[in-house]
Structure formats: structure tokens, C-alpha cells
Amino acid sequence: MTLMIPFDNSYTRLPNSFYARQAPVPVRAPRLIAFNSDLAQILRITPGEVHEMAEAFSGNVLPEGAEPIAQLYSGHQFGNYNPQLGDGRAVLLGETVGTDGVRRDIQLKGSGPTPFSRQGDGRAWLGPVLREYVVSEAMHTLGIPTTRALAAVETGEAIFREGPMPGAILTRVAQSHLRVGSFQVFAARGQLDSLRRLTDYAIQRHYPQADGPMGLLRAVVDAQSQLIAAWMSVGFIHGVMNTDNCSISGETIDYGPCAFMDNYHPNTVYSSIDRMGRYAYSNQPEIAVWNAAQLATALIQQFDDKEAAVAEATEIVHGMPDLIQQHWLTKFRAKIGLVTQEDGDLEMISDLLNCMAQNQADFTNTFRALGGDQARDQFTDPQAFDQWADGWRSRLSREKKPAEVINKANPAFIPRNHRVEQMIQAAVQGEFDPFHRLNNVLSRPYEDQPGALDLTRPPAQDEVVQATFCGT
Image (cartoon, rainbow, N blue to C red; front, side, top):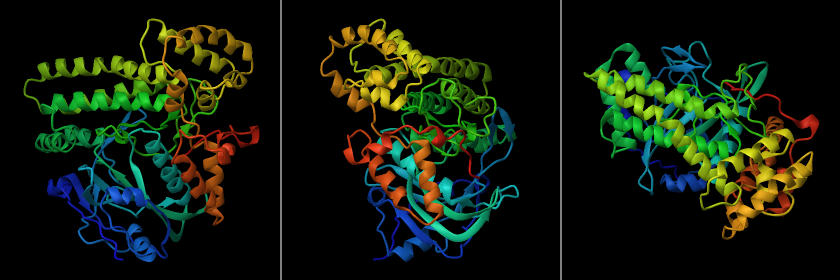
């Protein structure tokens, strides 16, 4: 069987100033680690022989119809504007239109230097590739919009970070790789024709119902509001919410120093580069609004009547906190078994979260246990939970099948940091069974899986992951 990818490329029909044509840099000895056959079926990809797929998904051999490019963008990084970023270690092979009618990008990440690499080697080491594969696929099965992983390949080459590391390449799939920074770069350069062209392209590709630039802004704000609420509902911390990591499609993108919380605390930070806590768990809604304001600032540049555009954009962005709160409340109501709405629900949820923070309660296990009778065991002071639970149980008496609602809203399994790190360490030694096991268990996160209870256990003291890293 021969690998076939039905490319139908549109981005390369935009002006050359939007990207640099760049082929992947070949690697020495590619070996296929994983291939996502379920995703491939949606993309209408016909798998090939294992060796052939290793060659294609390492970039050694370009599939027919591929038009490899590195995309241009800029962005704010920790609040500071960088005028040119771009794909420094990724090449977009092309696009496909899936069986569901959705157009998606297929991108090789870690495929070698590009004109945007800024003296970097353009490579990725095995750890971040496997982390992104596991976490992005877990996010998908959790029902959260995300880029996805199609394949992971070892390169047979060492790359150097703090020392020599095994090289690897991830094949990432996204509804597009358009970011807030994709618009910022043209606005900052005053290239208004390019900005208008990109705006029209984004509307046609993602939000055909949107009416002009402000319609696009409104659609992105709504999509991002839903995304942030979904992140918060599973205890996910992106870790590096720069504008170049903010997708206008509303998908989670760029799994660098990301992590899922173990013990709940609103100020939790894992990212090794987030020294001031800018992207802490509880700050994510505020940062999403900040990012939307940067998109608005860029889109406004193409209007002749800027005063009117500023007024409309301000109204849209200022409405975003309430949108996030509405989506957040819907998510967290379900997490405690509520479908109907009553005054006092927000206070009840907030009281539980405060109690969890004070009692070192595990985020995932506590909410999952609300469907049974073990939730109090998650608290250092179980009586603190009992005091909260009296009012909650009274509220539940007015709901239908609350336990069923709780189990559908709260996963039993997440990619816990210590398990991901253990998986990576095993893979570095050539053992990939933990990687495949994680993927298998996380493909059914809402199911009780008695044979995988060890993956629900929070880390022991010597297993706690204190910091996560970008892996660039």
C-alpha cells in the first residue's frame, strides 16, 4: 500500500510575503513511533508501509501534492512585542479537506531550520514531541478543541539542548495555523493590503458567517471564550499564552510548558519561563481577553473610520469576560451535577474551589469523586468538605440524575505530569510501552478503567513535577 495524502492547498495561493517556501531538512534514520490511524481516516489519508510513512513524516520524502512552507507571523511574548517570529522549526506540508468537510493543515514540527529560525537548529527532541502527541490527543478525547497529532517519528540524530537528546518530529494537524500574531505582523508593518487579504482568507476559511473584520473579531472572541472555559474545567494550564500561540480557530495550539494541575490552587504555575505567573491557571481568562485586544488592535488598522472601529472593537473585547464567565459557569455547574440554573450556584462552586485550595485536594479526583461517596477523602480536613456538601446535596435534590451528569463532565483520567515525564524517560531509553499505554487509556478519559487505576494516582512527593519546559 502506498501512502496517499489528498492535498488541497489554499494558503500557498496567498502572496509570497505571507510565508517562505521551505522544504523539510532530511534526517539520518527516521523510525515511525506512532501513527494516528483514526485521524488519518478523517483526513482521507491512505496509510503506506511503515518505512514509507517514516520517510514522509520525517520530511525525507515529500508526498505528492505537498507544497512545504514556513508561515510568517509576529507576536507578544510575555507582553513584549517581537516584530518577527514565524515558523522557526516547522514546515506546513499542505492542507486536506476531511470526510467531515473541514479543511485542516498538516505540519511537520521539528523539521529543520527555516528563514525564521533566528539561529536555532529548527529541531525538536523526543520529549516535547511525545508530550504534545499525548496531551493534544488527550485534549481531543476530553472534548476540547485542539490541534491533533497524526504521527511521531524518531530522526536517528542527536540534537543538543542541555546535552545530547534523541531527535524527533511531530506531524501536527490543525484547522489552520493562523494566530493572532499572523495579523499583528502585517498591521505593525503597515501592510494593509496583506492585512485585508489575510482577514478575508480567515473569514472564508473559519467563519464564513462573519461580517467583515469586526465580525471576525466577534467570532474569535466567542471561540476563545469557550476554549478558556474548557481549559479551566479540566485544570489545564497552557503555560505560554503568547499571541503567537493563540489560534483564531479556537483550538488549543503549541503544547510547550503545558500541564494539568494535581492539587488545586488558582495561582498554580508550571512553566519554567513564566517567572512572574503571567499565565497562571487563574490568569488565563484575563490573558485571553488581553490577546483578543491585540487582535482587535491589528484588525482596526484596515478601517478608514478608525474611531467607529475602535468603538465596536472595544464593545466586543469588553464583553469577553462575561462570555468566559458564562461558559465557565456552565462547565462547572455540570462538574458538580447541576443542569438547571439557580442563584447561588456561582458562590457554591467558588466555595468548593476555595475549600479545595485550602485542603490540598486533587482537582481531577475530587470532581470525579463527587459522583460517588469518596470526595471527602481528597481533603486534608474531610469535615471542611462535609460542611460544604450539606448545601450542595440540598441543591442536588432538585436535579435529575446528577451522578450521571458528574461522570460525563469530569474525566477519571488526565495526562498527569509525573506520568508524562516517566513516559518520556522510558522513551529516551528506547521503551515506548508507557507512551502507547497512556494514549490508549487517555482515549477513554470518562470511562472507569480498573486496570489503569495507577494512572489516576496523584504524584508521590518525589514524583512531583515542579516545572515544565518549552522544549524548543
